[in-house]
Length: 221
Image 1 (cartoon, rainbow, N blue to C red):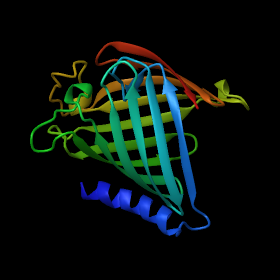
Image 2: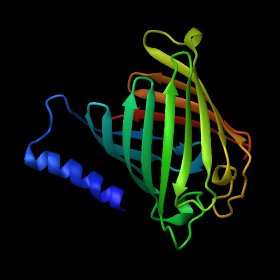
Image 3: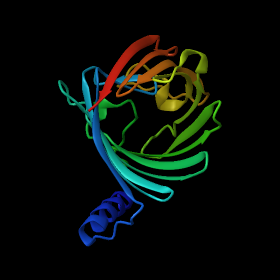
Image 4: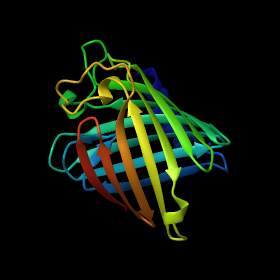
């Protein structure tokens, strides 16, 4: 909770006191998707509006991101902070899901609706890799690792195509939000073919563990 207060204070203070550095950037916008699929799991099963705001100065970015379902209560509101240097980025995210049934994490009375994750990513150009670990608010201490591969042969000047493969443990190894499995060994939960062109994006995602597949389509507003 302290991290959330500090983040909000930094954003508000910089704006009100007029101390925003000359090289700082503020980003604001929203995306709309036909459904919200996160790391191989369908959340909300409805159209999702996803607004965001960010503040970047030097190597540091802090921001807020949300997902709001238009036909269900599957809502999420997150805060994050990222430090990047060269191809390496470290991010700490506070995921806030006020309704336990909207997410697959194992909530308990000690942690409530907040899950805090540490993530490290490395972009090698020909490929990228990221690893994330839930160190607070997840009774199963779940982790997730994803490899991204740009498919240059299928891309052109106006569009990009890539392949993503993700392994998860704990809460990621389930297809029932109400009864997450306790699983320590990494399990293949994402095989995704991703397309982007201008403000549009699409992904065909298969979760081999849950035996589910999704076609996700989105547009940046």
